[in-house]
Length: 245
Length: 245
DNA sequence: ATTGACATCCTGTATATACATGTTTATGCT
DNA sequence: AGCATAAACATGTATATACAGGATGTCAAT
Image 1 (cartoon, chains in turn red, purple, blue, cyan):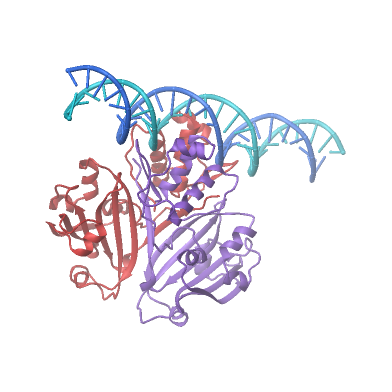
Image 2 (tube, protein in one colour):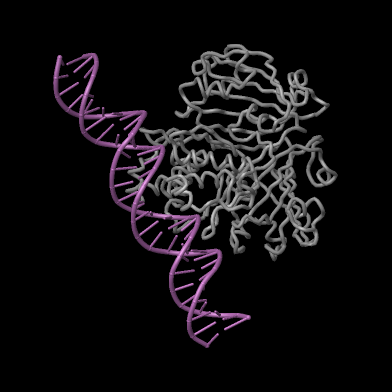
């Protein structure tokens, strides 16, 4: 888990956080280097120390910095050059950051009644309609990932092929009145299905990495279930965890 | 990422956090149920609201509760019945929580000079000695996980077979003067090695899940590198991520 | 030259307060 | 009874203050 929302304008501590993240990720703040002290940051942003500390604590929790009592905050190099499927980052954001040549192909898009499995994962009755989106993700002209998205139709009223080819997340963030709040991922390794063989460029790999993604709104209602099926040689997941003392 | 250290005595907000975690995990606080309000918690723990909020924010970040403005904090059922390899939780804590029949077998334990790969992962020179511990983890008499630990010997002076059969983490937490601060995990899927075939009960699985674990001290020095190799059918990883708005 | 005392800077924890904003409940008017 | 308003309650953000404790540099005494 690493990357989160980037919007935040009237919020002082989030703007400080986002600006520092940007400076660290862009390399303007180098690994090992010392951030301005909390007191200096209060002057730079004309705010109070507690507000600065909120921003710094977010940075620490997400692996950007290490705080040392009596010394200061130092930039970690833990997050560099990784390929996280982690957090709430979408495929589009990911590929943009990595700058790789990638393509999204919409295989199918339809409103339908969920099958038993999907209804169970989404925790709804089989009569409640859902959108089903099936897409393949390609890097360098190889279909590497098969994404099967399911959205509750009462929450996402409209969906078009154009939106699915672009970024569904961006669309939801802008158009949905209820904002996305948190997500749970479950990673397992399974045997490939017929569909995997059919839709992915499968160089004879006998297994597939399945990332089940459950996305919740702020009132904790589950509105999206996605199965992301990765060719094992291209899969990579990074996790950062901090210990409380 | 989900589980963190449990120690904290003179620390008010950490004791509140740990007690609430305990109540949620034990089921005394049920999913969907409402926690006492921040004001009520200030009275219960005879402390200030900001201190209570620190505890509640930790709970929210780790997926235990959902905070709703104007309403209160509600217990999530996101973390129940999972098998996280996530966070800094050790194998022993995991199995204890799951209550499964498990066994750890120490294959080898020796002080040595690191090979090229390990030295690179630990970011040390090949002349700096390390402890190498190779262990298998069994569930229901099947060897499922192969753990290859490497510790910087200048930081971990002594290590015995008994410690390795028990919990190295517990030993380090108690004996090491410098406390563990954070860890990074990288999950990939690879082809099994000779060693995997030899030491694991491998029912013909053609791939293996490799979890590379980098553990850091509070001064951000990397002191442990562990490769945890999991039989794919038994592997499961859970991640929780929150979006900032 | 080494040590020890002290001042200074830095982060960690805790408290009190103020105001904004969303939710629920009670009130009172029509 | 119905409805709008107000009060009470809940969390979100921001500020100011206090004290503890680690890190570091200075300066004087030895």
